[in-house]
Length: 106
Length: 120
Image (tube, rainbow over all chains, first blue to last red; front, side):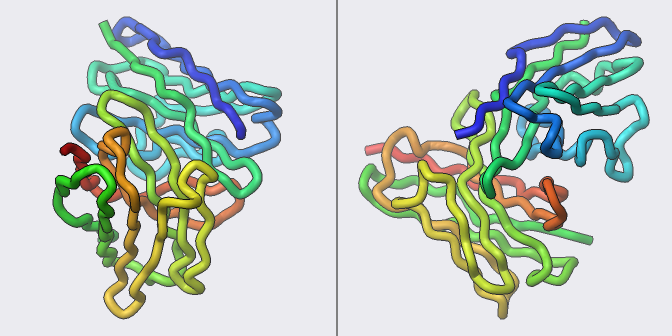
């Protein structure tokens, strides 16, 4: 079984940069995706294929993936970005999610 | 527009089975995998498996291999997920999600979830 590890929580002040990491064995050799989930809502992809943004996702969301760590970066964080964030990757035809990170904007 | 509409909430007793549906529209059903992901109360996302709507081929997470069956009905562009021998820890929101099918793919559309409650 493949494990993806995220910090349980990250705090950021409005307007600052938030970074959320996702660690897994040789994760950099796989594609990582990131999902945002707000309370009572379904997850929504914000980054796929390590660094691509779906249409409609603000440019302040960016991603990178190298070595054993993928990183979601939110520049100029806004209050509306407060949510749970999950990383996701494939390994041997199975899908794995990280445990999730609660981003608090305060 | 792409839509994945899931069936309504279910209340089941331990040991029973539940079958959740995911009615799709707005795209060609056969060309995108459908996955099922669950989320226990206050917990993270857990992948259960996927189905190829074109062939019906499935692959399941090892944890669910012996209790879960995913099927589809192409005539009504609907995917189904059945969980047997329900336990209290199967209480969760169950999501269906669409996968574009590219290498290292992701989920671009999600259903609104079906709440399954297992309680005696």
